[in-house]
Image (cartoon, rainbow over the protein chains, first blue to last red):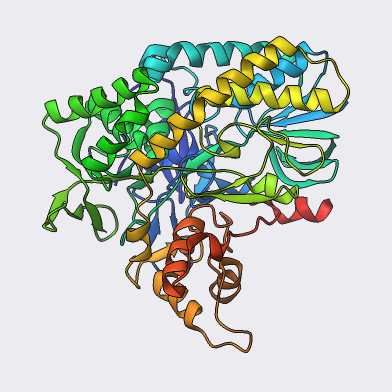
Length: 90
Length: 456
């Protein structure tokens, strides 16, 4: 899956790293938007049932937690991307 | 009186407005950076879209709530980006920007809103499946579509609204499947005509989708969402029982709304099962006052009634709190609010009858399907728990099923799996849905870092 940008794409670019690899999103994006415009999932279920990519987008389902250097475990859908963030999905 | 308002959607904003007008300076808390709630969620900073683009026919209301919220920030003790993770007598346990704080308040008005209610469908945990609310937030707040070719499965006004919003945004809508048959909606039409404007808007949405050539199935059922690592297609059954496979790369899924009422639960408010909504709701006296001392509820968190009702209910609950603290109440204003609130229940009941939760489908969730996505608990495990012959008997209610299977024990605290788990359990036990109860709330209502909690 990949999110499709439809509006407000003229915002300044914001670089970050995803699992150590350089990636790019836009200023003002949440981590969930930033990750899913670059990759197809945000986490892997601890129970062996595969990849997850968030679900509710409103801070309720808690299914989009990632690791952010300096912040620790972070909910992607409600956390704004800061330029230079190092995000890990595992 | 030290009063706190939790939530900054339509209900919370109007509650704070009244409190400020009556000379109070409430603590006002929301997880978001600005007010508006989910219905009027503000767009990403730097947006070039207008309020009309973002909120459609509700643009004027959204702008009014935003302007009011901006004005009330200075007049209140505004705490944005703050989670209330527990409610104790006279104390709100909060967490914000890495810092824990217990905030004192004699009275608390809970305006905690609602979220999508789910029917577990095989494959619903695949990347690319989002709630209808999530699909809408992606589009409106973040300017992204959840995919390039999207199927919408569910029931309720939001199903048709979000599908139309995607269509209007230029996204290919592969399918709209409503589990409610047309005749069920038609039967409720008389009641819906109590609000002709809203009813008309709904009909217009369906007509627009059909005119645009979108494939629409009413009275059908989702069979599975399929794909290896992400959504590739959905399989659905139409009313005649024929199966159809529809290619898509994302799915919006939702079957009405449920209250976000964990804090009212922790505060000790009793709950009752509301059969029309098929939801558990905190009890209150019609003004928002719950039997729990100093605890008030308003808006969708007190039972689904929509944004317009939430504005009235938030204001009304604030007056109830003011009256209980011995403050002066503006009688004419309270009477106006009460009149407005009295008009709403018949329309809401008709809406619930028009789009019922597909309880029979939930009860038939295939054994291998994940119900609790936090703990990967399947429908089959729940049925086993119901049959289990433990010393103390099988799981005769949901909290016991939780102890046996971990359903609802994960990070989301049963927000998603609670309603379908109850349906599956009730069907397995052969009892009524209300008899299996509801998952009790536990603090923290959302995850907080362990060191922060330990420091409390």
